[in-house]
Image 1 (cartoon, each protein chain N blue to C red):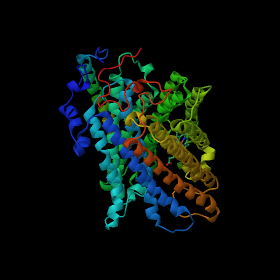
Image 2: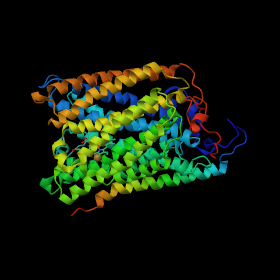
Image 3: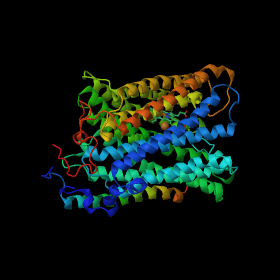
Image 4: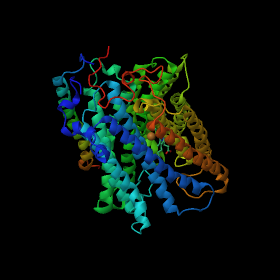
Length: 43
Length: 535
Ligand code: HEM
Ligand SMILES: [Cu+2]
């Protein structure tokens, strides 16, 4: 396996950064769903 | 290490150092997707036997009418903790173990995208499981009155009044939920960002698709469960009245919140399985998977529908007729995409060059028995009929055809299918076949009578029963003990396979298709140093 057809180092770093961003967003969504229940007022 | 670009180059030191530590520290600090997958699967197997032991005690009590072995309070605790353990500590961790092992291998990624979160997601589980079961032990020393005794659904007002086992369960569920959300986030970002070049979403292996939908469902519904149990906690200790009618609250609200999570949960448990079954069927039929796109769209449709049908779990609690009709029809509607899946499974085998190794046997057993779960589900979805069946043993039989035959047997399909890839050894086919046939026969012996018990009116969750139910209960108990002990064959077979055995080839199965089979068996510690390129 010497001719690397896959990602370059930079590409991989970029993808990892993207992953971290998306992870924070998904985590925030989960937290928001949890919190909205306490704010939501049921008449 | 090769000079090729790899994920490790820019990750934490821990990620790099972990593989070189020995003993306990290796497992505590590992960020390798295979190590973590192995831990999830091992944990699941242990909890499967613990949950199984609990329910065998229950079945022993139910062998005869009257109270022989235990007090009703303890009986209730065993039933509730059995369900929570099996769902949260056996089935879900097993599916996450599969995801950890297989998703990077199948999509050509070097590892999961967030390896440290991955480690954390696993290590939250043992404390959570301990919390859930600890009240049993504490009660032995005279502390508290035992574990949660409300059933896994934790319905108010029972759970508002219950003992400290409820608090333990609430805390445990919070931790389990955080673990599931961390795992889900990791799976989503890995699938979105680390697919090998050329692997478009419509070339993604079905197993990864199934898990992707599961992960989104978890992120959408676990917070609702967490919210519901937090409200329960504040009702119990901080003077709120969310579920207390005397204080202006509404106990039915708890049922809505619980099942808004609870119904999607059953699809959460099964979507990873529906993802892996086609791979197995294709392999042993030596044919490509039939209807890939139809299956992907069915997964998405089931995912979307699963969050809008929750109230079919409490038709009998009372609701306006239009609501009854809506929940009845929407529930029945889910069987359409499900039928598409069944069709594709059978069509994949159709005119194939089939052979019947253990994974294939389990996959086919799955199709037949899980089919019965779907059909009996349709009966339960009928509002008029459900008034008769609700809270009876018919429901218990229905969901064990779904969760044992669908869930556990699906997990076993996956274990038998991938174990040679993971360990580099073949397991014993003979023992595998014994395990399969004993499981299928004793499973039906256990749960088929429960349909008839339910139809005849035996309620669930009671330790004593009327005399007309004697025979079916005795049969069911005998079946359950055979079923339980047959699983030891599985554990032994897996153990032997990990320890040694005939060398597995890289491809393992003649008809295997997919990236993971290009790697050696077992795969190298860092899966894909160089990403494969998909045509
Ligand atoms: C066509 C498919 C299905 C339909 C129409 C259906 C319908 C229903 C209905 C109406 C109930 C409530 C019965 C009652 O309490 O009176 C129910 C219970 C249940 N179903 Fe299904 N179901 C289907 C498939 C599944 C699947 C695939 C699973 C699991 C993976 C599952 C797991 C469960 C569980 C766990 C319960 C009982 C929960 C409890 O009360 O403890 N079902 N089903
Ligand atoms: Cu449901």
